[in-house]
Amino acid sequence: MNKNRSIFPKEPKDKKEIHQYLQALKQADIPWQSGKVLAYIYQTIPEAHEIAHSAYALYLTENGIDPTQFPSLLHLERSVIAMTADLLNGGPLAVGNCTSGGTESVLLAVKTARDRARDLFPHISDPEIIMPKTAHGCFIKAGHYLNVKVKEIPVDKETFRADVKQMQAAITDQTIMLVGSAPSYTHAVIDDIEAIAALAKANKLLCHVDACVGGMFIPFAKMLNYPLPAFDFSVEGVTSISCDLHKFGYVPKGCSTIIYRSKELRQYQVFSTSSGPSYSVVNPTVLSTRSGGPIAAAWSMFHFLGVEGYKNAVKDCMEAKALLVKGLNEIPELSLLGKPDISMLSFVSTSEDINVFELAERMKSKGWYLQTQLKSDISDAGIHISITHFNVPHIAGLVKDLKASIQELKSEGEEAKQLPLDPNMLKAMMANFTPDMLHGFTALLGSNDQGVPVNFVAINKILNTLSPSERDKLLVAFMNKLFSNEA
Ligand SMILES: *Cc1c(COP(=O)(O)O)cnc(C)c1O
Image (cartoon, rainbow, N blue to C red; front, side, top):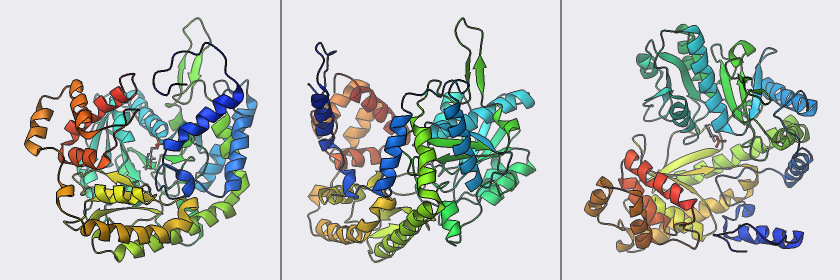
């Protein structure tokens, strides 16, 4: 079986061969099973993974498209939403839906706000939402898809919290919703949700809290008496919350929730068209056909782990985060950004000798995957680390290898650290960029047999010198090429 250019199979193959092929293919992936991959993967105890796996398989075929014909899924989804809403102090009137992920949850929150404004406030012709610059990029994507303007407001330079005064100043008669994160992904800092929600309420605006990454973490941390601020429906003025179950809920991927304080608001989320000759398309979420797998897995995970299981996971993660913060504080070449509220964090380099992209690559050679982030108008290029339950035993080793990598990089020569392209040439290339020019970049920087770059240090250094709009041009062209036969 050829990896890249497959033609439709003529002869059926046997089960075993197919399975072996799929297994073997994973060998090139980042080896997350080691527990040393500190992004993308959320895992707790192995038994929980097994439960989720079997529940997912049990409901793989059932279709959430029509809850009247699959009362099993109606029951499971209502139940998952009720349990999540309970955790978020939603009260008896809270409603919501399971979605495919945080992006879909946020997309729906923005659509709901837009359609409510269309219904209730006809003077709003150019709806806009206001959010801190640290909010997740999926809001910008939602604005792009839904034709809603997204105003990004600078955050406090020390704490990385939303600057609520500046958010207030940005409100106009076209504003429909304010956004806060609980917490932001990058810095793991919880915005002042009480202040944002109060501002929203005073201006008769909706207030969405993006708790995609924190919604299944903060409530348990509070039960463990970690002093974290109020962020959920207990805060007056909060009207909707996105909460991913496939992050710290430890549910398999494809599961998030969008929850509203009441169904008066959620009515704007539901879409219906019944004019065609076929079945009426009446969907509460973006997807129409959807597998019962993620919902059944979520229901099972909640019941399998219970409050005790989640509290244990959160406690271990918070202790591991403290260990990592202590370790980072012992490394003068690195500087933690803000004070992370949950078990994720970002840091930057404070030393001329240490380039974070080189550091990430050096760590990769020691078995670690750390997520790099490009320079922005908020912070310098940096590294992000998410600690989930199954990473916990590895954090002492992480600190040790960070220290070792830094010593290694410092003892190496300067010439290895230069930008791989002449900056003026790069500028000239970007000024007249066409997608074909990617070939030039690839030839210069190298790629593997699937067209994936191998030299991430060089790529990141180049991207880091470009403006966001130049980066986006390059990244779109790259992604467009990657999923093609040219790659
Ligand atoms: C992960 C995340 C999202 C997006 O979720 P996806 O499931 O990746 O679509 C949105 N907001 C925050 C804060 C996140 O951490």
